[in-house]
Image 1 (cartoon, rainbow, N blue to C red):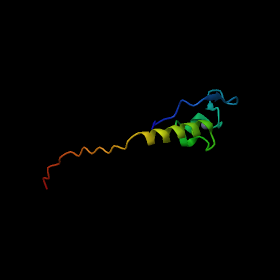
Image 2 (cartoon, helix red, strand yellow):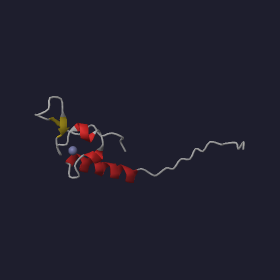
Image 3 (cartoon, rainbow, N blue to C red):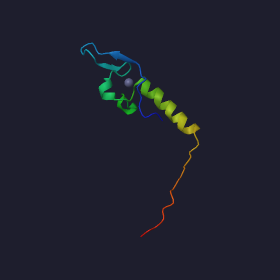
Image 4 (cartoon, helix red, strand yellow):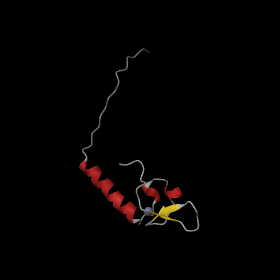
Length: 75
Ligand SMILES: [Zn+2]
């Protein structure tokens, strides 16, 4: 899973000089802040990315890797 989602299509907000928003759900990038869950629930980008995230999760075998350092008890 990607930590940040910044590759969504963006468009300039006409009223603001240096502001952009998601092309699909029209939520400003400053509010989305790279997080998928900050898009609208019906945002096409969010739905698409969400599907891929689920697919990736189902394809990857869950590997629990425990590298427990051996701690000598000095107590
Ligand atoms: Zn969106």
